[in-house]
Length: 134
Image (cartoon, rainbow, N blue to C red; front, side):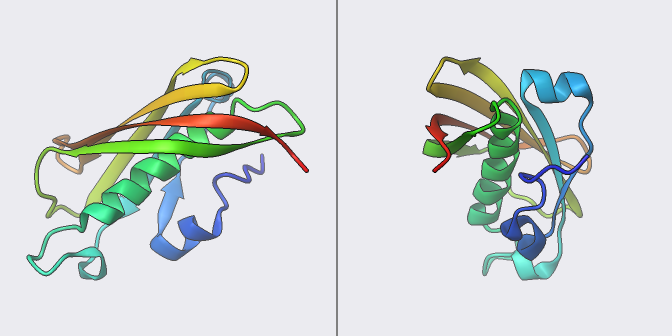
C-alpha cells in the first residue's frame, strides 16, 4: 500500500526507512522509522548531529499522525520538543512515533529513539494541527 508520508523527499535525502505498518498501526497512529548511520550524519565531535535526531523524530511522529487523517485532510506540525539522552555512535537508529491524543483539530504525538543496542538516545513530542486540503 502506498504511504505518501513514507515517500517524502526528506526521507529519501537523509535515508529514513519507514517500516511497514499493520492496519492496527495505521488506525492508532503508529510509525517506526529506521536510519542507518554513517559519518556524513556526524557533528564535529564524531557523534550523530542532534538535528538528525530531531528530523528522525519529526518524520516518525509526522507519519504516525498523518496515518490518522481522513481523506481530504492534511496537517502541519505546531511545535516539536526533543530531549537528548546520550550521544550516538551506533550503526542504526530506530524511531517509534505514536499518537498520544487527538481531537478534531489538534493532536499530540510522542517518539522514542533507540540505537542498535536498544539504548534510548532521545525522546520527543510534538503537537500537530489538522488542515483541510486546498
